[in-house]
Amino acid sequence: MESGGAGQLQRGGNWAVSGNNATVTVNAAQTGSTTITNTYADASFACSVLDNFNRSNGKLGSNWAGNADDYRVKDNAAYLNDSDGDIILWNRAPATFGANQYACLTLTKINTSSEKHALILKAQGTDARNGMIKVAYVPKYKRVDVWSIQPGQGWVKRATINNVTLVNGDKFAARAYADGSVRVYKNGASIGTSQTSSYFVNRTGRIGVWFLNAEGARFDDFGGGNFTP
Image (cartoon, rainbow, N blue to C red; front, top):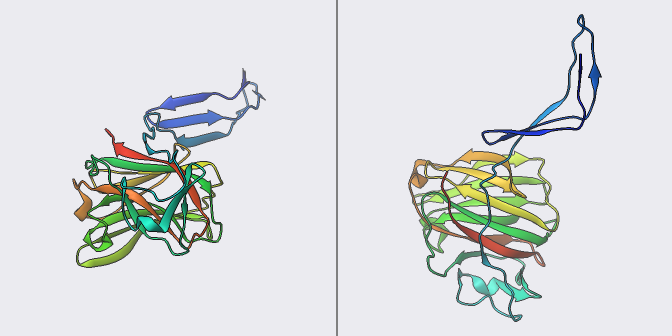
């Protein structure tokens, strides 16, 4: 019996199954093996761009709320104008998205010593204490941390996704589901999931960005909206 040839990509549900390119020759008394790699490939994921920053250099403008002065537009991208940085939320109608929502951006220049290049989901306002989910890429430690905060409770780290390396030009995204869970994406492929808390079950909210201690970092093509699971 002979099997093999060019590697094939087969999709079953949301799982992509790929085999290696080896050809294995066996007789009736032998067994053969091949390497199978499984990755979550959600074909329905797409980032609808809300702000491509293609405008004159200067302030972000009224489309953004929160500490928008910490960021600037330069050369058709957004960059952190302040070494600390803070939360900014999308402010153009509809500023609030549904219980199944997502946010995404392109990391055009990563500050590799930073501890936070983050997306914000289900924010209940620009004051974090009112509740929000933070999905943060941590270049310094090559990981993604999922955090949440809600009234009466400080920031709680819900999950850490280790061994994640993003490079300039990569697309970083996250989905927050009506059941309170979160799924994180790198270039459209899922890299991990997390639960948050019952506070975020069926909760709507706003989306945004938070870069911290990431002076000079830049991002582009911020997007987001609603999705159907």
